[in-house]
Length: 87
Image (tube, rainbow, N blue to C red):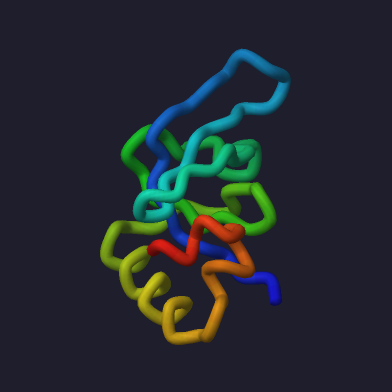
């Protein structure tokens, strides 16, 4: 299954050819490419699909989307990895 998972950008790096960031998924942090969401910045919520932020969303929409994803058995663990089970 491939889902877009909402998370909040907590750090941004422009040091490489691609703009990268660290996104927090309620305690699970992952590196994410921000090239497809160039206007996203620290504090913004983004939808992340296979390591790429594909769009910005507001905090309420992120919470609604996360609630739907949580209703799907093992969805977070599948998308974010084994540490996501603690969410």
